Amino acid sequence: MLLACLRSKRRWLLFDFVVLSILLLLTLSYSYSLSLSVFFIEKIFLNYTLLFETNMAEEEKEEMKSFKDLGLCEELVEACDSLGWKYPTKIQVEAIPHALEGKDLIGLAQTGSGKTGAFALPILHALLESHSKQGYKSAPVFFALVLSPTRELAIQIAEQFEALGSGISLKCAVLVGGVDIMQQQIALGKRPHIIVGTPGRLVDHLTNTKGFSLRMLKFLVLDEADRLLNEDFEKALDDILNVIPRDRHTYLFSATMTKKVKKLQRACLRNPVKIEAASKYSTVDTLKQQYRFIPAKYKDCYLVYILTEMSGCTSMVFTRTCDATRLLAFILRNLNIRAIPISGQMTQAKRLGALNKFKSGECNVLVCTDVASRGLDIPSVDMVINYDIPTNSKDYIHRVGRTARAGRSGVAISLVNQYELEWYLQIEKLIGKKLSEYPAQEEEVLQYLESVTEAKRLSQMKLKEIGGTKKRRGGDDDDEDIERYLGVKGKSSKKVKRK
Picture 1 (tube, rainbow, N blue to C red):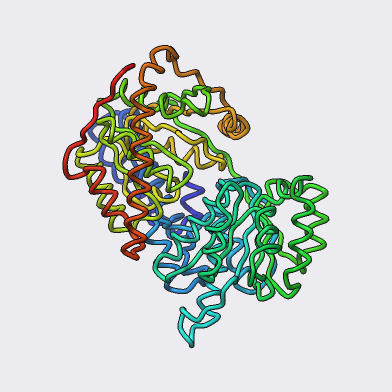
Picture 2: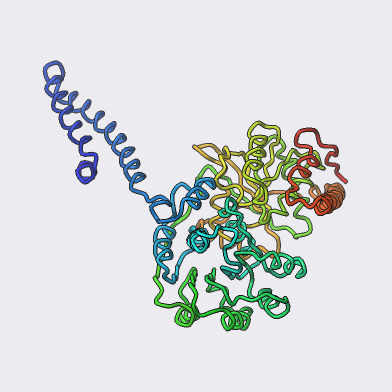
């Protein structure tokens, strides 16, 4: 401690400790034995050790770089602050300054290291600067393309772009499979600034969508490049690289540096800066972590069963998409479970309003996405349920960290269907432990099937009705209709019935 204190800026702590110890030793030696004097000095030493550690932590905090220190414009610094991003992560600290200098990047980082912010913030900074004189609305369209190996990850990336760009009218389009291609063509017709998608669907649009071209593209991001370079994406990726301009900035992020990634690096990047960020993750001992393998078709049923069994608890239910948060909240409210959604499609004010209802106890189940939950002052909860297993392993750590805080106990339950096993195994590998199985008799769970199926049918009908009303009104915000239907200010109508 003494050596560290000498190295520290707070050398006054060492001086105070030495002076006080000498004075105390001289004073006590007249009245007490030497051993007793030493005992008192040891006590003082322990107190000073605690004080020193606290001050060292404050010193380290002072030395941490802020987003403003990285050179980002004021609008983006404010956006980070509104999302609760107090300090940049390691990879953001190392990557953003190089990106702002116009250099290509190759980042080796695990999922959840903050890499989305590491490429999104420089892109948005460049977008704002590109037309600062003419005004933001004249900023170029199809400015940046982000390629992802999965549609779930693409949606998450787009949500983070939208969250960071919410104050600057950012337009973002998601091009992934499993979604009506006509809807995506309409989104492209609105001339978005950012496109996030999977390689196959992007090639479909480049081939079939009239007027869509990436000839003016300024930024290309290859996220999880090691997964993008498998046989499923190889041809599509080649097709994309052949039609985008060579004069661009390219950011490549990968968990590992494979031979294929090295080959892609040589082909796509110009004198890139290599950045590596590694970290270890763990969960607290007071957290009880469980899983349940279930068929995808019964996931809603298991969720209702668990929430009903734990009805006295405050719970957070994590989903992968904004649409899923709304649908689940509808279903749960129809079954008299006091749930409220928080999603990236809601304004910050409405997210805070929903959070206040959760804090006050008016609602005891918060249904949310990872991106939407960040930056909000959410208190510790009794239970976290992973309705959708996160594709980003570190998101699991963030999710379950909402419970078992400050030495209290908590429960985290992950509902794993047949399509999510790989992501679940990645989580176990990350935290270095095997989870215990959540005990449930399937016969008891399926007693809720009829009620849950009916509630889901009604919820889907109501969502469709609200969507139609929104189109007729020409509006773009259906939060008020949703809140009115959910009965946040009133009471729910249906109760959970067993079969």
